[in-house]
Image (cartoon, rainbow, N blue to C red):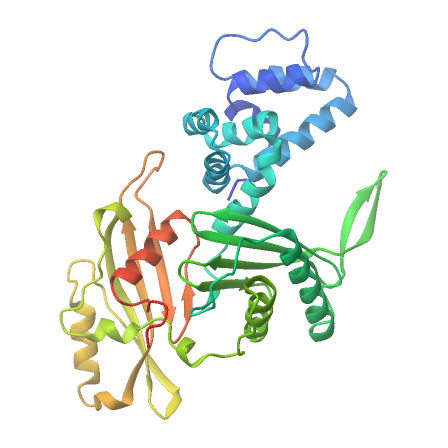
Length: 392
């Protein structure tokens, strides 16, 4: 997440060549003397902008703030995805050489039509580790997604949310492809809210109708659907049915017997179990650090076991064995696990990244859906934790 916008920080950190090009295209700082250094004296630039007049300065600051707010690894990754989609190798090479703030300004100058899709991918990547609910064993899509399908999905979502939750009166969906995934980013109207805003020199309460976040992430090859929703998770099965009807062209039951358990976390308890992560996934190490159990027939009774596995990978297994030896194994059900994943340091990383993954029986996975998250999903499949489509 970007730090709060400050004009001095923006001017100091943005590449000078791109800032000069922005000023040239907007008719700003015409008489300003630029030097040959990579960056500029931010105070001289801001003083010159102040001399350009209040309207010009406010317009420039509005652009700078928008660029600042969207810049970051996720937005750069979104732009690279767009470059690959459009097969623009020159843009791809340019983006790889620029810092994140530079890629955001470059996009505003050279590829403004890429910004919306890149921002969607950045938003998806930056989501907190809230639950994405997964459903597998969906029917295969009969053909490519077209605008008519998207409009049908919009209509059905409006009908559903206005009747069920008294919100969602308006809805717009942006659809884009990211690798094997198709992302349906939904802007549905939320309940009215009030905020204080300045208007013509007066601070007044304004009624706002912000959108609430609803994202469908569909993988036709895996026949899977992930849903992230700001709101009650109880409606997710209904949303799965609506998606299947409008996008896949088939009616599916609200629940599926094959879908009851997607993550076979009980495999972790098997003797000799090891998480599998080949070198190409970029994972340096992965260990189970926490397990939560519940008692069969008494789901309200549960306990969590946690151990320091930094120096001893088997410390948690030994602790769980000692803790549960007095209970019959038939009564114990593994309910949730936490996996700590460490990655190799990548170019541009200040330190090697790491992630925590929470898997809850039967089908909840809590993690960050970015490029590292994709490696985690592959690790779970290779390790036998995520069941393949059609597997009983």
